[in-house]
Length: 395
Image 1 (spheres, rainbow, N blue to C red):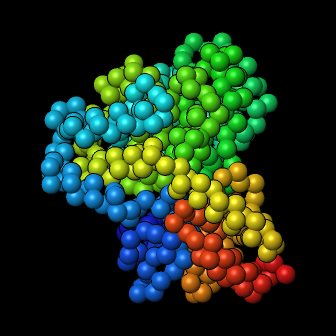
Image 2 (image 1 turned 90 degrees about the horizontal axis):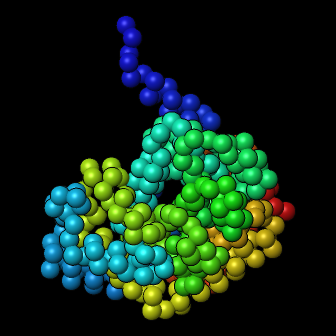
Image 3 (image 1 turned 90 degrees about the vertical axis):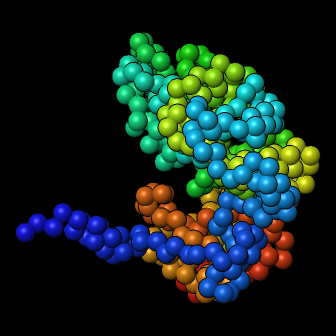
């Protein structure tokens, strides 16, 4: 007799044999430069807590203040009864911070892409140009549309121009979507050149700035600010779960764009609003980023220090242009073994393998934080060096 769910076990076993089955650790402490796992302290090099805000006292205090005043849950979707004063306050401050006319807050960065892409492109005559290394949330959002998706080679402007030229007579709308910072390699999209091409061909530009919020631009205002492209990028999508240290997504752009997304995007129409604790903490984050660039500067200083030290030790750190620091190992099982040995010695840094990155480029992706001290990072590099020599990765 057939067993309909047998494929689950078979697929999991296949993942284990291929070295693709991941170990999911449980954190027993607040996120920070160090975390506690199974009662032991580890240097934390794999969270997206870029600015060290996840446990910042000002965020915690703001949450307590707003929970006392507004409660916890919004109780409804934004378009029925879930829009509360703090949501509007946060959207206003995020728009001001990013230099946009307006902003809309959603439940996550993933939801923000699902809100934008299928909402703006709904016809089979439409075309989406997508960088070949775009994030899964962009890929899934594209799949929800009826549009034809045209992938171009990663950051290859000649290939992009060829795709634009091939489709310039299309009857429908056209939109290009790209990550701002590519999270596995740490490289930055060639946004000025992309914008020039899209303006030439009449194509909407949308950028997912998940790893650029709080990291690029003046004091972390993002990739549009970084390249001084205000008014030339049609849609900015971001997340509040990385540098902001909380949870949520944001769409920023013109007032008419935000009004359109607010009225038509399914994640806004059919999923409850972001909770008050999340909104409050995000308010504190944007206030901190507006007031001071100290954390931003410390993040970049730490990123440069870690890259320099790992390269000096003989590791391949790829072509990152941001604090994201990949240590490329090669095969998936080797990367998993490397991660396990790091963990035994006190460094929490997980392996990233296919399908997240191409086969043969499995890596340890190091995510530094403004919360790290140079002593923390020096200790981590020494452990990397020990493991690298043990495994024959470096000499």
